[in-house]
Amino acid sequence: MPAYKTGKKTAQYSLDFKLKAVEWSYETHRTVRSVAEALDIHPFMLSKWRKAYRDGEFGMVKSLKNKVKPDKAKDELSALKRRITELEEENDILKKWQRFQAEQRRKPTDS
Image (tube, rainbow, N blue to C red; front, top):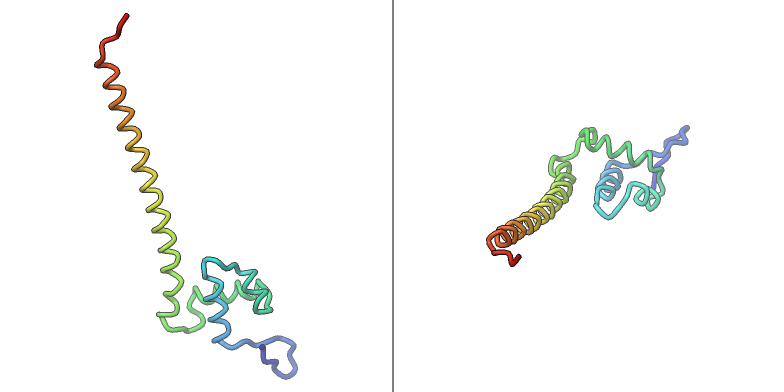
C-alpha cells in the first residue's frame, strides 16, 4: 500500500510496485483500467507510469525494459503469418480459376 509522507495527502508508491503494475498492464489479456482497478489506483496514474517506463525514467535494467517489445513483436509476427496464409490461399484460388478458364477455351463447343 502507499506510504504517506507527513503533511501530504499524496500517496508515494515504491519503484517495484510501479514496475510490476506497468508490466501487468502490458500483458495482452489485461487492460490499463482492469490493472488500475485491481491495484486500487487511478488509470491515469498507471498511464503516466507506462509513459515513464517507455521513456526510461524509472532507471530500470534494460532486460526489464525489453520485456514489452517481444509481446508486440510476437503479435505482429502472428498477424503477418495469418496474412501470408490468406494471400497464399487467394493465389491458389486464382491459379485454379486460370487453369479452369484455359481448359474451357480448349474444349470444342457443340453448337
